[in-house]
Length: 285
Image (cartoon, rainbow, N blue to C red; front, side):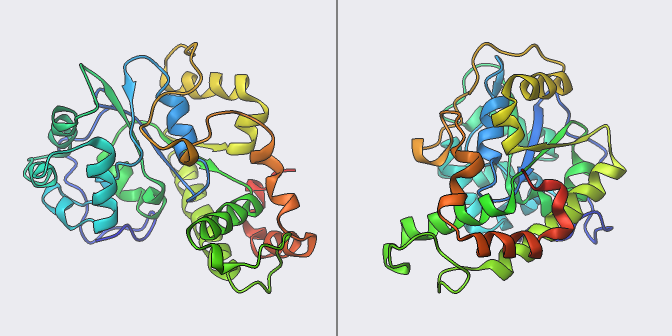
């Protein structure tokens, strides 16, 4: 099972008789892959009493019983990052409603202690926003990132996993065999449509941020984030989300804003902007 669709009616809507509340989950975080969702969840998890791990994503299941049918890679991330026991997923799937699911997640987790509220971070919630909004009555944070930066971040990940996929020459252009520009641009536009539709329909619950704006205007954006949550801004900037150093931004600098400029040709940058022009409000600079 995977998240599909946006705000369209679902064939399998959630049972909303027992909605998940902010008493258990302080916030839901979604956005583009390699777009800053882990960074944003880390910012939020810096507040005392809040906790997050690399990914959760349980609300993509229409019912608790269908948690076991979530994509295997997602379940592997869930088990590994929350340190669940061998039968952890089966126990979650045996819960009667989603409030019980998240109580059970905290109880089972080998990394959480005491009474905490969770930050449920899962980029692909952008693909099933109706399901999330039906099941959860708290704030949903979406983080956008300039499409040129998203594209370069994904290319860099490809090169890290498969060094033989490129010849070591940068900046790269659209003719390079490892580029997947068309697919990325189509996804970028679709997610923009989904999230702007949700924000227009639920302006008090769906909140849009830009990764670059957070980095450049950190103090102002942190005040906005914790104002939405009704919490004081914590002294600590980033919380522990249980990820490897290289998978989350641990220092704030301008590389998040302009690293792509020296790695992509100006022609490729222009093509990315042209293909993603329907989502121009997410561009930076």
